[in-house]
Length: 437
Image (cartoon, rainbow, N blue to C red):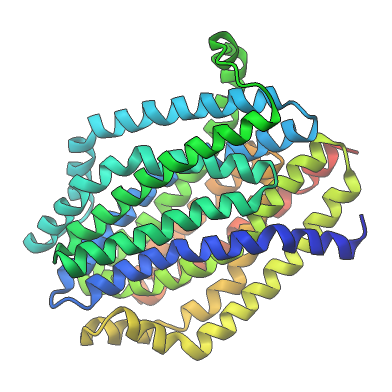
C-alpha cells in the first residue's frame, strides 16, 4: 500500500468517527450551557463535579472498548470470527457484573465524592440529585464501550460512529427536553444521559448480534466463552488498560479537585474551558480510533509496511488537525465561552485563562495518537507504565505550580502532563515494530 493510499484509507476510516466524536463533547457543552445560563452557579459546579466523578468511574472501565479493539482487530486479521463472538459475549457479561457492583456500592461512592470535594449546601444537594440518577446509566454506557470497540476492531468505523452519534444526539435531545420543558435542571441532565444510554445500548446490541451472524454462527458455548486461559489473557491485557485509564481519569478529577481548592467559581470557569479541550480531544481521537484497528490488523497479518505507514501518516494527520483546532479556538474562544455562560464572574475567569484552549489541542495531538497505536497493538504494559510516569510528573508539578501560581499553575501542569504522556510512549515505540520484524 502506498503512502498516499494509506492516508486516504486512514481518512476514510477517521471521518465518520470524527463526526460521531464531535457529538460526544457537544453533550457536555450543551449540559454546561443549560446549567451555566441558570441563575445560580451551584448548578454548573455540581454538574461539573458529578460528571467528572462519573467520567473517572466509567472511563476506568475503558478497557471494555480499548481491549476489545485490539483483540478483535487481531482476530479479524487472522479470520478467527468465532473468537470475536465469544469475546463480545464475555465482555457483555463483564459489563453486567461491573454495573451491578457500582449500583450496590453507590452510597459508598457518593460519600467518597463528598469527602474529596468541599461543597456548599446548595451544590451538595444538586450533586446528589445528579448522582442518584446517573449511577443507573452504567449498564448502558459500558455496553456502548463494548459495541464501539467491536466495530472499530472490525474497521467498520461508520457503524461505531452511528452508535456513538446516536447516543450523543439523543442525550442532547432528552437533556434539552427534561431541562427546558420540565424545568428539571440538574436532574434533567442526568435523566437525559440515563435514557439515551439505555436506548442506545438496547438498539445496537440487537444490531450487533445480527451483524455477527453474517460473519459466523453464534453458539453460546459456556466452556469456550468462559475459558479460564482466555479470561486470564483478557484480564492481563485489560488490567493494564484499567490501571492506565484509572490514572488518566484521576488526572482530570484531580484537575477539578485542585480547582475546587481555589474556589467553586474557578471550578465552574475551568469546566467551560475543559469542555473545549475535550472537544478537541474527541476530534483528534478519530485518528487514534481508526489507527487502532489498522495497527491491530497489520500485526495480525504480519504486514510491517502497513504498520509503518499508518503510524507515520496518523501522526501527520493528527498534528495538522490539532493545529487547525488551535487556530479555530484562537479566533472563536470568546464566542464559545459566551455560549456556555452568562454569569459575569464565571465568564471573566474563563476568558482570563482561555489562551490555554488555544495551546493544548496541538500539543496534545501526539499523546492521543500514541494511545491509539499502543491500544491497537495491545501493548498495554507500556501504556500502563507510561501513564504511571506521566501522572507522577503531573502531580508533582501541579502541587508545586498551583501553590505558586494558582489556577495558572494548574493549566501549566495539565500541559506538562500531556507532553509527558507523548514522550514516555515514544520511548516504547520500537517494541511494536519488533513484534513483526
